[in-house]
Structure formats: C-alpha cells, structure tokens
Image 1 (cartoon, rainbow, N blue to C red):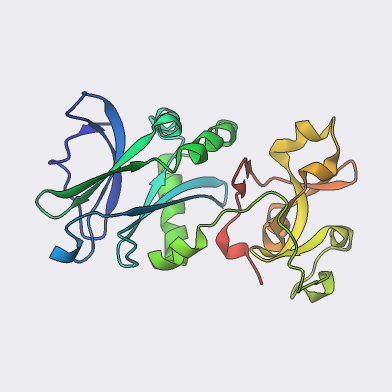
Image 2 (cartoon, helix red, strand yellow):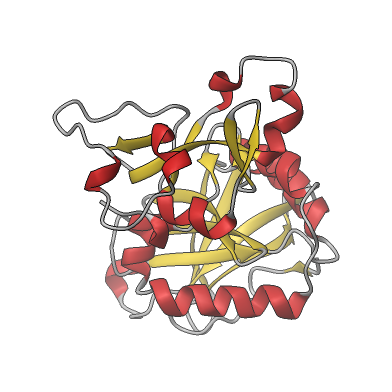
Length: 269
C-alpha cells in the first residue's frame, strides 16, 4: 500500500478510507482511517470518540471484510471500509492490523485534517482470527471483490442499517427460554433429516446447528457436538450440506471469537 501524508488525503463527503501513513514522531508506518463527514460543519470538527465494529460477510464465493466507524456516536457519521485479503498487499495489511495496538482516525474536510484521535485498535483479535480463515479461502479477482461490495451495499445500505447488521455471533448461543420453537414454526421448508438440528436463537432467529467445514479435521478425533454452531436456515439451504459422523457439515466459514460468516440478510425471526 502506498504511504500517504495526512495532508494529502482528499475525500468526498461521506467517504472513509484506510491508509498506511508514517508517524512523524518515530517514523513508524501505521494503518489509519481517514473520514470526512457528509455535512461539513463546525459541530463535527473535533473527534471525541470513535466506535468500532467489524464483520465478515460471505457474498457468493467472495469473503468481504468490513470495518465500520461511528464518529462521536453520531448516526450521521458512520463509515464503512472494506478490505480485500486477496489484493496484492492484502495479507501484509491483515497481519499488520492483527498486531497494531493503536489506530489513528483522521477527521478531514475538503482541504485538510481537522482532528486526529488516537484510540485502541479494537480490530486486533478480529483480524488475527481472519488470517486463519482467509489464508485457506479460494481466491477472487479485484473486479469480483469490487462487484461483490457494490452489490452487497446496494442491498444493505443506508449505513445506519449496515451498522446495526454488523453483530457478533457467539459460540453455542442460548435458546431464548420464553420462545421455544420447533421446525414447524419456520415459515419455509426444512428438509426432514435436518429438523433434528433445528434451533431458535434470540440473535439469529431460525437456525440449523451445523459443523463448519473448516473445522472438519478437528471433528475427526473429537465429539462432533462440541463443534455445532447455529447458522441461519437460509444460509444452510443455500450453501448446501453433507453428513459427517451423523452430523450436518456446511461450507460456511467459522471465525474464532466471532462465529459463522453468514450474510445478515439470511437472518429470519
């Protein structure tokens, strides 16, 4: 990635980018975020707080890594920054993000940087987990990645909605005790052999407990039930499944600490 000076960044209103820059104090190269609010006004000329969220979206065969920033807890100033692991500098940037302790967020206007906030890098564990998954993923071209991002954003913007969709899925979520459902409550059809693995969770809705295919090796010598994860019914039916030791296995990537990489639009309540 090209090294940028913070004074050389020129953004359109509402645009946010990631960039590698050189810190003037110690000449250390860091990854930072540059963002320009949609409305240039004095009340957003200073950064007080930056909220961070990250997620992995599987769109067709492309894995889209998304980082989001919310400036000063303002719903108008939400920025989405997308990462392509299979770009020429992708693996190196992912590795850097998994180790970089701090981030600098630059608030810009059409002329210069207005404010800089140095904050803890809340994406470190996220990117460390991604490296173990994406390194074994199939590759895609830059054009395929850009098209996937454009199509996904067209379906899931505005950014406020996208911000709400980026959520963590925890290992073995508890079933909502006051809403015990069964496969007959699902609005669509669930194959009969999958119905024994149906579960309803409060954050994911109608799901099927499956074993992610990237954990298949571990399942060979352990109890398969320890590797079951709840995936939206839509995701399982679209991706397909097969059987291993009496349990369904689906080609849905699993990220340690973040759960399954399933599209938010697959969630049904």
